[in-house]
Amino acid sequence: MEGGNVTRHTTPVLAGIYIHIPFCKSKCAYCDFYSQTDRRPVSDYVKALCLELRLRRGYLRNEPVETIYFGGGTPGLLVAADLNRILSEIYGLFPVIPDPEITLEANPDDLTPEYVAGLKTLPVNRVSIGIQSFDDGELQFLNRRHTADKAVKAVENCRQAGFGNISIDLMYGLPGQTVEAWEKTLDRAVQLNIQHISSYHLIYEIGTPLYQKLESGKITPAEEDTSIKMFDLLIDRLTSNGFIHYEISNFAKPGYISRHNSSYWKNIDYLGIGASAHSYRKTSRDYNVSDTEQYIRSIFTGKLPATSEPIDRNTAYNDYIITSLRTVWGISAEKIKSEFGVEKEKYCLEQARKYLSGNLLTYNDDTLKLTRKGLFVSDGIMADLLWV
Image 1: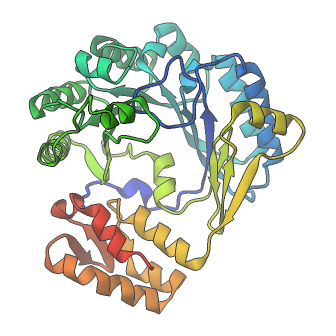
Image 2: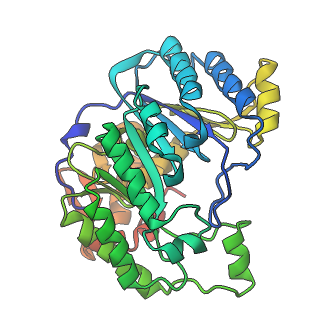
Image 3: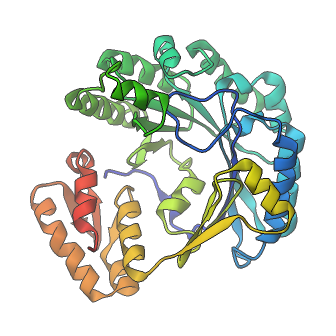
């Protein structure tokens, strides 16, 4: 994968904290993340989040916290006082570095001038906006509440309030979406002069309204050739406008690579707080229960509603392959040898040989990386490098 100025991450990332806010005004047609539209438990949920932080203060083993991320659901539904309470708890319990990246996910209709002004009173310094499209018909199809103009206004509100690190989410590969319509969305995104864009192909998750429409034959998925053209256009349009393509679905202006998301791809410990949140610290993963009421009840009695899954050496190797090959930093053969042994290093390089000869991978400076051509078949390449 071609890079650019990625020197921001030459020093080790430290640790991260993820806060899951499982409340939404309405459910999007494609979303299978755990969330609910009943917002009556919000007050108790915020109390439970703070209590869980206290219960798990030792999880990160006193590692300095570099990033804090409010994800969802719709974290933008929390008022500034709630966010401040959670952040105050974090700062009181964990060693947060002087210049952390603190991100809040929000929908465009939440980011009114008044709400954004409230955010500026907090240490939140990055806003991630779920826009998905600048085509009103596509937004209606996805059951989004905002219009394209409201999305643009939300970005303007954030910029006018003083936020200099703004990310947006976009989606392509929708039924009936044309390459021309996708190009217009990309053009409008570039014109916003923002710092980061995440862009994902639509996935039909089991149980979602879109999946049900697909199963009943009411919609037809995008053709593979059209999806490839859209991904190709995405890369060309964003990289030609100064974005670094640093992960398969993520693009950033120099100096604005997401520090929090990079922790997931670079084997960094993180603590997940809230219903359905996941935590990771190299030797194990923890999974909180995906039930808000059960989560609150358990936390209020002083019990963590989580299950733990140990990570053995083979799983750790496979995790490294899957996460690292997605990025501009690639797979280090030396790291494989030092952490997983010579046998796995030889296996990985042997499995990679046919992709190197096919110009789907490169191997320079002891590092395997996807080529532009390899990006389009990355899942298959990763699968072949896994230890089975």
